[in-house]
Length: 552
Image (tube, rainbow, N blue to C red; front, top):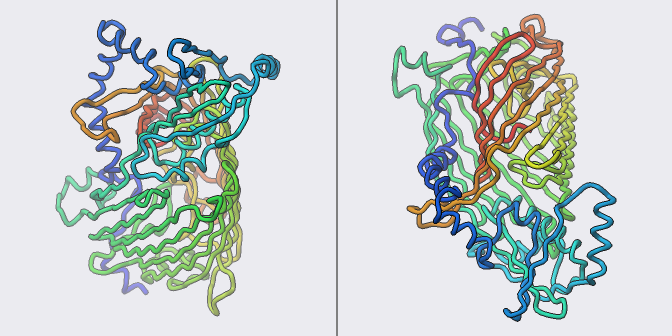
């Protein structure tokens, strides 16, 4: 056993997912476009420029130019078929006050019902009409009071945006006479094929690579992501990477099938071979072993899933997977708890179920609504003679987003995970420091364990309300028409993780953690959120960090 350790390299403080040169290429490409056009768009929309002010006024009066998100929230324009009698009806803003809402409903009910005579869809060059109509909580022939119509249309617009197919989805109303309504839906589809290069530095950090620079220290490859190819909201992803780490990842997600489009299938095959592998956590940093001439880790997974979405907001997911793992005996020598029952070669089946109830307005950067998730996973189903796995995991996630008053918002979330079994091992541990499982203020640490709980909260102010703009030198509307907004937020998080195996070597486990700070969020199209945050934790440590994605 000791013989196999002669040529390995041990590294400390290695975080592959946070490596310095691993950059999401799509976000970088869009960021370059935004930097180039930001000053141009700001100048064009500033009231100090007469031409811009005139354009803004013309836009407000132009029925062919769809209103912005904020406009849609407050005004519905109903234009009669006779131009000489064109009218405009102003709606009150959405409110949670039942008294105000009741008064509003009573006032609108006096006006009578409106019949949806026709729904016209424009801009869907690829997306099929039935995919769009499936997301609308109304249809041709519905008879609704005006306040009901407004709410249902706004809900449908959010549903369309949350499909991930469109950068913009807007509605124009026309009164065809005798309270018959024609709805025209304008959509701007997203670019749907992304062949992007992947570049990853296989060193703990950039400074260490600069001491002895070499191109052999890089892993490189390509990520191909294609969606909505046939116009039915399907997805194919193929990712490949070579170097010290070799990866092949194929994912397929079918369209929703059936008469009501309620059932979807997912398939995945993933192969990972690596010359380096994290084998333990000490002092809240990952320890990595590396073999220069052989692969220390071989893993592959076959997975299938069934998604059932009976309505608009609830989804049930059933999953079944097969996993194969083969590790060099070096890892077991370094950490006897690395594999189940001390084994370095094993395979097993796993099954899981999850439920998701999502009533957020815009999933990429929510400002109102809520999300409820819960799930269970069982690793080791007894289907193989020597499965050597017996782990059950439960998780739950609740998020709530609140509009306080004009330009002020609040949000909080609770997320917890519990894992227990007879073969708890290091290779499949997940603790604090990965993805959303993070107490802000501890970004530089990995805190491992099988049970954890996190509470997050923030209050934000909309410094720059959402605006639309055009990048004049780009001929394609999928990239030239943008929206953007800027938010200032103050946040506070607390969390705790339970680790009964390695707590003596990691002083942040089994104790409450707390952090807070202030940050800026920049939200733009293609679901991109750039975040910069200054944090301080309960131990007095400060830091400045950049992130992609909404904080809660």
